[in-house]
Image (cartoon, rainbow, N blue to C red; front, side, top):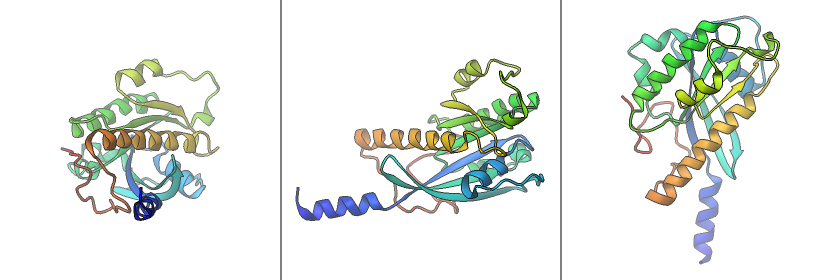
Length: 214
């Protein structure tokens, strides 16, 4: 293997890739608080609902890969808005959040996952489930359904009990999601010649990776 090949490979590995992650769930589940905690290590006690959609980003390195992680904060009321499908375009993964103290939001998590599955019917979009605000509960946690069965039936790759207030399991959850995405893309790359685009800016929702959405 010649010197130029090594230099090109090294340069390619140094360039970050951009991953678009949807963060969805019913109103007041703590989606924005989770993003603020993860991206800026901040927590605001005062609730302020998201209007439409917003996104924050964070740079990290996982599996020897530099990643620019864009977290798209989609307002809870947007589920029945026609714009939801536009927001979903070109996503690489998703986080579905429910409030561990409100059973209705747990049931609402399935509706959001159904929307994701519908939009990405040609693939299984890597998705994790977060039971947020667990700092307000006393273990063992209980929900309307068995959460292990719920995760399996609705094809979440994993679930985590999280607290944006106490910074519990948020880094672990998102890093697990990124690892699954990268492993999936590495598999596609080895079997189909698939390649992630470096430094791709997804804020303008360009076409990417041949993925489709409704």
